Image (cartoon, rainbow, N blue to C red):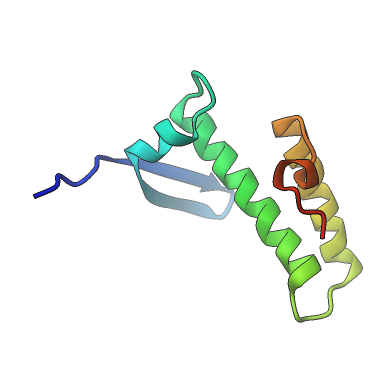
Amino acid sequence: MTAEPETIDITIETPDGNEDVTLPEPLFDVLANGDESNAQVAGDILVLSCAQRVHALVHHGEDEIGAELESVEDEMLSLFEARFGVSFAEATGHSH
């Protein structure tokens, strides 16, 4: 019988509430760059996920998008580049 991996609970706090998320602890070892803390890895996951989601909505969604969503994507991709030091397109090899 294989032992269940340990988990880490992450709490996300926003102005309108908190959300607890449980993730497998080995995930942090796999995704960490060097000596990044678990909190930094969780932050990276959140920024990457948001960038991917808004990019998909703008460029691959079936609904028409407005200028506001395009503006949100521009801001998210700027935040992505500031965090990772490369553009979303460079990091993913995917521009549209």
